Image (cartoon, rainbow, N blue to C red; front, side):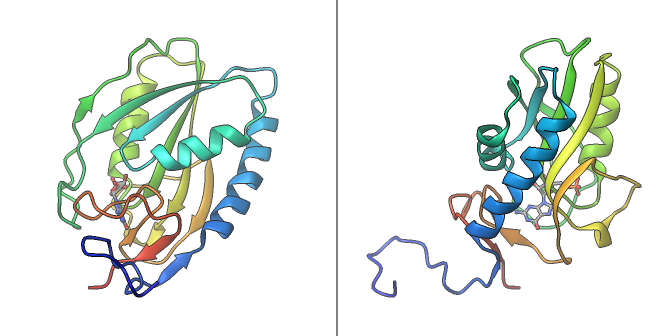
Length: 182
Ligand code: 5GP
């Protein structure tokens, strides 16, 4: 729509990288694999705030195993698009993960610093198992060696917005994934 009322966001200027339909189809496929891998278990899915909330909520509705959810918030980029390299827990889990089958749910792996830190931190809390699922992966940007267990899409080195991902807290509500222009 071009006739937007004042205050509406203008998303047409951002190129679509992945449509809502493509994302939905891929999440259904991922959920099938994950449900199979966790059959007979009751995984605890840990969403990384805030970017992963949309992915987590769509993913869990396609999973067929019983599960629990919790959230953790870590500092990352602030309001800029360049990584600071410093990871800090801003909001911790509400429960012990000892003996649990933990699946960390992330929106995007970029430098790998966030997940590298979280896997080490959560791994030290003695879960029964610890895996990572990410919707998006930008392997070209890695600063540390990190490989997610499940990945939705490998994408090029572009800054993306939508489907939970923000730019200065804007655009999380877009149902497709778009590229932020320079
Ligand atoms: P890493 O620690 O792997 O460099 O960064 C992970 C975090 O950086 C993600 O959870 C996300 O918040 C942010 N990030 C990395 N790349 C992008 C991107 O292309 N768009 C947005 N909106 N955030 C990104």
